Image (cartoon, rainbow, N blue to C red; front, side):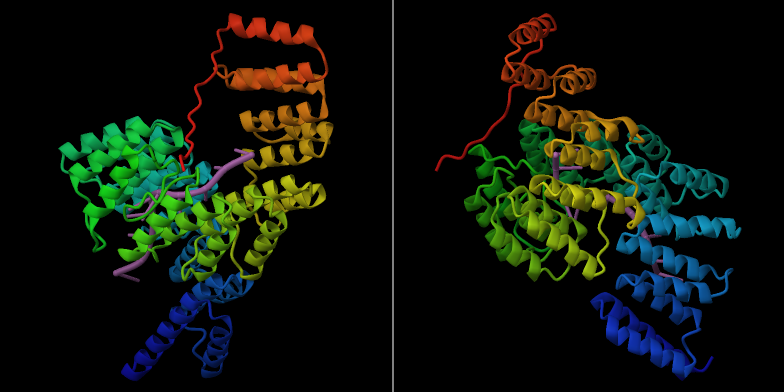
Length: 515
DNA sequence: ATCTTGTTTC
């Protein structure tokens, strides 16, 4: 190949990458046309870049068309489209293409497997994940650190933390990323202590935890409301010194947080990137702004994690304009940020805006994920938009090819229940493809109280007692319902039953800010 | 050379 030819294709490739990065659809299409005229568009090297470009712009059918033009046995085309899909969150599609590739008998590529496993983890596709695990064992790829870390992450995300741990135990050199993935699995299952133990254990053999490790632990303990452990982790973090990957003044940042925590201001929703639990769900804008200022001063405010956490903080607190300003100023958006905004709108009664933002995502070719639908369905629920909610629920699978999770069914039951369609809600529960969890029955019970349906309420309460034997809250809800309709005998019966079972009221943690 | 971990929940 001529040198000049080579360098001109390289230039084209770089240009396509730039357009992909900027999601500059029009210039990219023009360049594509130019390449066709020049007779260069068929080159695999450029075609694979164009596939990534179209995927990045949300133009899936164009990406697929190009993909179909490259000869089937060319491995680069498979790698390029699967990676592009995974990057943009088209996980189901990525898995689909991978399956296609297996059908073609092309075997597995060690650089491709991590992307596919990532996709499996995101859509909870354990079945494909396990198959890939088997293939990796067959091809002796389990010793590859990237593959092992990805396997661990996949099991961890699918709720199989013990399996993740087993793979981790088999690792010859313990990778930090793999450790973090296991810890995150423990956190997800609510057994963060195990994660902390593992971290301590790994420190003994020279694996140094990093920012991600600490954030995962803090997030895990915060979610459980175990603030004592949160401070313990903070102390540990200080003792260990953080690997400085960003150049700023850790000491001052932590002094502030330590001071805040001494005052009882614990971060209750875990946050941020390079050390910034920018915190507080019980939104205290004063401290939040302080942390925001801090992040600005030390120059981490543009970090996507930091900014997402800030948007979330403002959105949670109902500080609409602050959240919105930050959101629209973000150069790099993450699906989490969109979701936080939609939740923020929805939880503060701006349901119309929540739905509008969802529609805007669509316009911008941003693929919603399962969390987006929880957010937008709860907006419909609050606004009483039953029909819209139902059609959105159906679109999850049909249009977006995301498998509805138990959370979505809980939203649907809530939507129908609030609207008084209790029987329809119960039908959903009877026909849903997975076991209803406590949020599903909880939604039904709540609706039963508002719409005074004793039979269904008793049924829901029965299931809740089985799912959550230690809790008193659901029985209280039922007792309130009995009281509402004046069924005092039943109230007494329930009280006796609760006494017998010694159901103690949970001690609630609440934090009220002193002015 | 390409690939993996941390932010959002009814």
